[in-house]
Image (cartoon, helix red, strand yellow):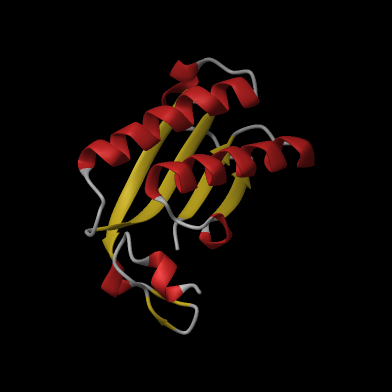
Length: 124
């Protein structure tokens, strides 16, 4: 359901990608209660990043249901805090941005996705 893209100027090792993916998946699942198997993480390396960032996290996340602006802010801050430790870079060199979309705009697993908070019913 959620799709994250991690942009970096430098190429990441397979171990770094695995650690980053796990941290994003664990954090998103913990904060939003989305089952971890529904979270996708993509990597794009070799790009010049604006404002001297070393890592940009872009997430496409469903709105509505149990989602609040506070939840998204908590998630973004936690991602920066945790990922700065995973790949040993300054938190000021990491930027996050979420594109919020309505659940009814997303089709996956053979159906229109449920509202946030109703994932357990659709994914049994």
